[in-house]
Image 1 (cartoon, rainbow, N blue to C red):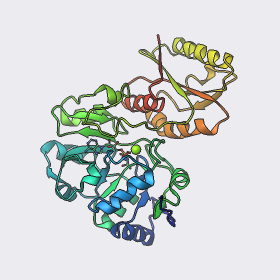
Image 2 (image 1 turned 90 degrees about the vertical axis):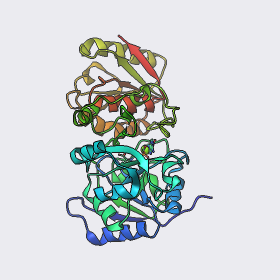
Image 3 (image 1 turned 180 degrees about the vertical axis):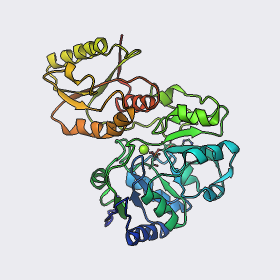
Length: 359
Ligand code: TXA
Ligand code: MG
């Protein structure tokens, strides 16, 4: 039976965070409870990372498969020595440049981290979030906080207080509502225990930026591009359906977006066919291309010149598909550089790999 909890909602302004609310939420973490909190990427659902009973409640609240490990959030580099037995030069170099921030590193775990957090693995995922509320919460709790994204398993990650209240009421002890998150897409995950390091999930930080600091290439497997499912043991959890709307979604991709007009005319052809089959369609388009489509619903993701904006709007757009009076969604594709890699990974996975290639 599912436990129904009395959820307390705390509205905390990130620019002027109320200490009494933060202390209250920190007390819940210390006492083994579950707290939804904002980060700069997406909202997380957190518990004391050193308390296996508390961590188990996260899985229950999310309906998350037990073999999908969690990210441990820290507020201070000193906490690395609690979490990991082996912290190399590269980790400190990356931490200095990108923490606090949207980079998650896979390290060898210490015995203090329970196997519930790592789903039985000898490695652990760690990051220091760049959100004042998250950092203060971890600090005041006096313990690292294990937290996956705060969505029910399989749904797009929550990027606003409204999303988490809709999804998590009655399932957790506290929800901290701090409004919209900055990036709107999850952290970049890199397995730094491997040589060369391996990208497990593209995210809010571009791979190119990480490579510059490491001064080496990062391996990008096909599953990190969202082209195939990851069955490999190195990327547990990546094989589960993610970020998906309930309605069918198709991604129309090209190898070359330099001639946008040529590309869009082909998307238009596909949309027309769907309409002729009597389907109500919505097109996920960009500011540069939305005028190519008429007599069809449009969700504008943002400008192709500003991939940050498109990444930020993506999960809201995926949720919007389900709210509109349409039966099927078609999304344009984007070039796979910088955050374009993250955007394409999420779109391809959200579509269940329903990819149509055009010239
Ligand atoms: O931005 C983010 O990363 C957000 C915020 C809340 O920090 N968190 C987040 O967590 O996206 P989650 O659980 O939705 O995604 C974490 C992924 C999991 O899918 C899992 O596959 C991977 O991290 N992961 C965790 N520990 C791992 C490990 N030891 N080895 C390989 N992958 C791991
Ligand atoms: Mg998630």
